[in-house]
Amino acid sequence: MQILENGMVEIWRQQHQAEPQPYIGREAIHNLILSYFFLACHLPSHHPLLLVLPNQHQNYFYLKEIFCFFQSVYSHIMASATFSVAKPPLQASGKGFTDFSGLRSSSAFLPFAKKTSDDFVSAVAFQTSALGSSSSGGYRKSAAEAKLKVAINGFGRIGRNFLRCWHGRKDSPLDVIAINDTGGVKQASHLLKYDSTLGIFDADVKPVGDNAISVDGKVIKVVSSRNPLDLPWKDMEIDLVIEGTGVFVDREGAGKHIVAGAKKVIITAPGKGDIPTYVVGVNADAYSSDEPIISNASCTTNCLAPFVKVLDQKFGIIKGTMTTTHSYTGDQRLLDASHRDLRRARAAALNIVPTSTGAAKAVALVLPSLKGKLNGIALRVPTPNVSVVDLVVQVSKKTFAEEVNAAFRESAEKELKGILSVCDEPLVSVDFRCSDVSSTVDSSLTMVMGDDMVKVIAWYDNEWGYSQRVVDLADIVADKWK
Image (cartoon, rainbow, N blue to C red):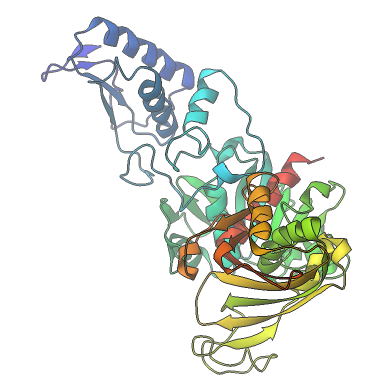
């Protein structure tokens, strides 16, 4: 401890900054906090204090603890305090402590209970989470404390969205340690950082050598193989694979990850054959840990199933049809070129492209009582993201539009909180970009013809919202892990 030339009291500074800097443990940091409190209470209120921490990335979390703890409990004492930290080599950004390091956090909307305790670390962690913080930001708990080792197979639209969504979660039971991407490290790093739909990722993303990338200092190994049998899942002790290629969607294909050494697989697409399908908020509570391979269904099924469940429970669905006006995807052609589907062969950005979808029929996989009652088509349109479902059903109970919307509101506030929402504003598709929920009912467009034909319009972000549900389903797998 010493008095600086500018009159500030310096509590501690590591000497020999040019030398390798050791890790400063939590106990040492807390001792500094006690010293800080002691001086703050005995110095004049206007006297500034300076706490300097060494140039190490791990200090970010501890500095965060100090900042939030002082701010919430001792703000009246520390009004004149000054904090200083040497810039870490992997600093995420120049933003403030409470700025969120991902695009958006969905933790505040998760339908799962959060665990908190009264100890110092947990209290501070809670304050910095989406539940405890007044802002939507916060610092994500270190992935090193996660429970399951996760690999992402296929680093395309869903793979990268999944990683961003996971990065934004607090206290995640998942630890993403590997990515299989045939594009290589440079491509994986660049496309994760810069995204035409999501914008620039608010995280420090960079290649690490030729076989890894770093995300805010978290090193993730990048491997490259088109055959899952050749992947090093056994050597890496992978627990869970997020299958995001859209190719290995049956038991034989996804099972190759199991043969390679992984324990379980979540397919981010409709599964084929007898693979169990789960939609969070609809039937995911029925998941059994005995199932090594499961499907998260499609983005459209994730939008449709929650509000269809409400309609069927409240009014009884007799039959119906669905049309999804869906943003174009990578399965279409940029310019006219050959494709197995002659309509998808036409230029995606120039046409409305009618095509098939199994989303309506797939609802029966998660709501068996609706088997044979729903069908639908898709219209691919020239927008890069966000889609909208138009459902028309005949119901057995007589009703009216306001009653239908009231049923949606009730469910959105209770059992489907964080999954379903209701919008009363006259919005358009871009306004639902990066919406965390699976479906947003547009209340002003709800119609009832006669008293038994119901029309419902629901928006969904077919990339971001769907990826949030993949993370949720992975959390459920982790919670029921055996």
